[in-house]
Structure formats: structure tokens, C-alpha cells
Image 1: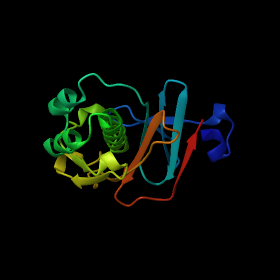
Image 2: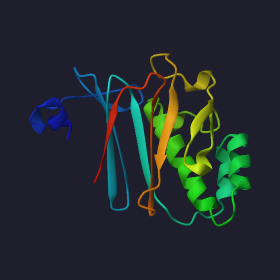
Image 3: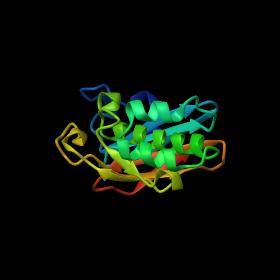
Image 4: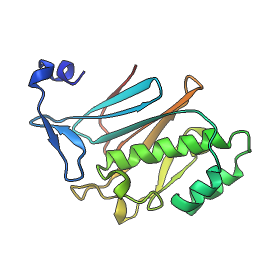
Length: 175
């Protein structure tokens, strides 16, 4: 797919890696990210803006509030606790996919503490970044991610993508 976007043969695509190992493309402003869960793989493409994407199969989560209390921002834990027990697993996965997309877009991966930023309204599927401390600056010192677009369709998976504050038009591919 990268070769197709770049109009190159796959063997001519040259990768470059960020200081934390995030792959990019040498000599191109096309940014991309990839995630897979179960039988689903997703890729996101963006021109000139770092992007992150995550996908998770919807499943039962053992002790989602305990996990959230240990790793997530206190306001996120409060919102998760306010969801009904029957909706909590999906809400947790929505939050998880958005947080994963944010740290991937920032190029920091899980070296960025998940409690260093806060997403609100994730239980409704309309997550937004409500708290951006200095810890969310990307590797260039720019404002890190500002938006998280989340979908739960079809109902057996949840997908989220995030891009930095000045988001460019982005394409998403699901296979």
C-alpha cells in the first residue's frame, strides 16, 4: 500500500526510523501507521502529519476498572466507572484504542505514560483530548495529538486514529 501511495514498487520503498523506533518513509512527507487485532488489520495515511491508529477486537476485559486505575488518568477512570457494567468493556476498549493511537501519533509509544494525558467523552465514541501537559510534546517539540476519531463498526471491533493538532486530510484503510 505504501508503494501504491508513493507510486513506487514495494522493493523501492525506503524506511526511516524515529528515535523511539516508529517507522517512517525516507524522503517523503507521507506518514502512516498500522495496527492489527485478530483477523483485522488497519492502516492510516496522512500527508505531513504524524498519525497513529489502533484496532482492538471487542471482548471481555478482566477487571477494566483496576487496569484503568493503575494506568489511566483519574478523570478517565471516573468516566469509565460511570458507564454501566454492560457497556464498560466496550468503553474501556474505546479508551484504550484512542490512547494507543495518541501515543503512536506522538511517536513515543508506551514510553509516554498513559496517565500523562486525558481523553474525555470516549464512552460515547467521541473522544477528545482534554489535557495536554508537556509530556505530550512530540519528538519535534510540537503540540502532540489533539483529536481521536473512534468508530465501533462493525460491533466486534473498535478502531481509533489520532493526529497532531494541525491535522491534515487523512485516509484510512481497513482490510
